Length: 260
Image (cartoon, rainbow, N blue to C red; front, side, top):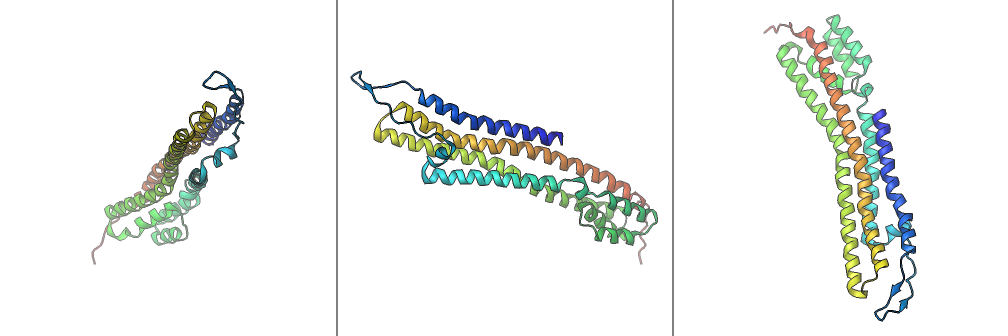
């Protein structure tokens, strides 16, 4: 919980830093110096353009708007997969204590069939791993151990595949932001070629282009943090499952295989 709160705090700081930059820039843009013509005469300053977030989103044209939609979608998917990851790696979901207690009780009684039935009625990863081992109880401990290891690898791969979607979002967001910035710079230099240089307008256009990169980083930084937290939690759960599984199946070490 402390790591979650820390990650949320950092995410809020990153987002707040970017959002507060908009009004600050707008104030500076309004206070720029007077324009001077080639003959030294004062020229009328151009009417200030909008610098609200809506203006930034709409200022890049159709392509820029589509890129902003892609950024919002990337952020939305990142939030979804983060929440899904926290639901996925809960100890109560991966290795419920009730299942462990029931299986241990059945094994203490030497009733492997009861243990298999208990695992059949539980959808958790721990139940699938234990069932894989119990299903080979007649083939000896070495085969049981190999079956449990194979089932454990499958469950780990399944968890990491779902968590990797967070990493995909964290990698995609800054790329989309960079593409938006490149697109904005292309429009800026095209405008310079057609209408000439006007410092205030040029600075505003460049700042709007850079906002897509900032938006991508605002998505990527928290997503990377949450991915690392969830991945570490999943690794700790895997280690716990390994220890608990070994403790449960240790009574099967002396099982003898009778060839009929």
